[in-house]
Image 1 (tube, one colour):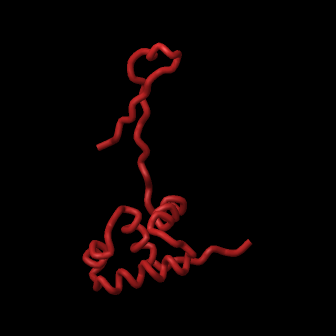
Image 2 (cartoon, rainbow, N blue to C red):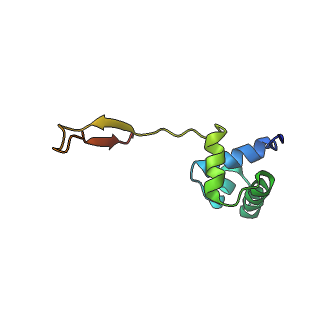
Length: 94
């Protein structure tokens, strides 16, 4: 089994910000770099990890605990609806 490539500290910072939904422009501002440098980091990370979309990059960040996802709570809502199944509602945390 191949050893997965290691990310540099800067690459991890970029992956974290992508996972948080930041654009390349946002990343450049937060990390004090040019837009071109932020885009180059993103591109190099995608090649290094053999990823083909931002969605895959975000999933990588979640799976490798670079970003953490808080799932909404599922709570029962009222009585059953007559078909024998209880209804549930999602509560999204603020």
